[in-house]
Length: 76
Image (cartoon, rainbow, N blue to C red; front, side):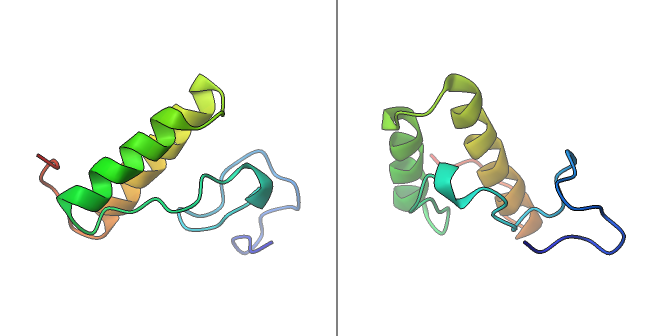
């Protein structure tokens, strides 16, 4: 797994916004390129069988990635 330089293996700290440290738990197909994609992603998160905490984590990661890409407005 990719880690930041100097970060020990299996560290509890998140290493990177775009690193998938646990592929088995990933909700696939999320995106934010346009309003329709963002709404579909929110629907996928809501309808997933993951725990509430996992759903929140996926939504927050999506929001942080969008901000990093310079998308500042909310999807309508």
